[in-house]
Image 1 (cartoon, one colour):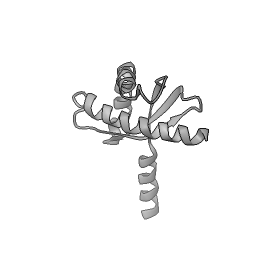
Image 2: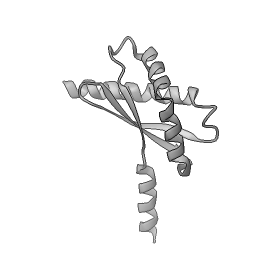
Image 3: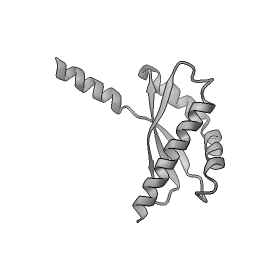
Image 4: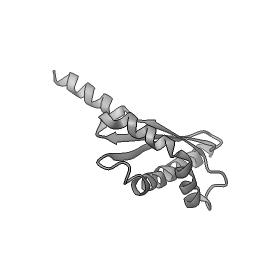
Length: 112
C-alpha cells in the first residue's frame, strides 16, 4: 500500500516539476531541452531525487548546477501546486540522468 502511494506521488512530482522547469527556467536555459525523466522518493516522502535529462548532453553538468542554485525557488513553486495533495513538500535533489548517453555509447559499440 505504501509503495503505491510513493509511486503516485513521484509521478505527480515528475509531471509538476517538468512543467515548472519548462516555464520558469526557459529564459536561463535557452537552447537546451530539460526533461524530468524520473523522481525517486524516500518512503516517508521527505526527499525527492529528481533525475534530469539534458539535450544537448555536453551542457548537462552546467545546466544541473544552474538548476541546483534555484532549488529553493522550484520547491516553493512545487509547494504552491501540490499544497492540497501533500502536507510536506519534499526536499529536492537534482541529479543528471546519464542513462541516454550510456545507451548511445552501447549502441555505437554494438554497431562496430
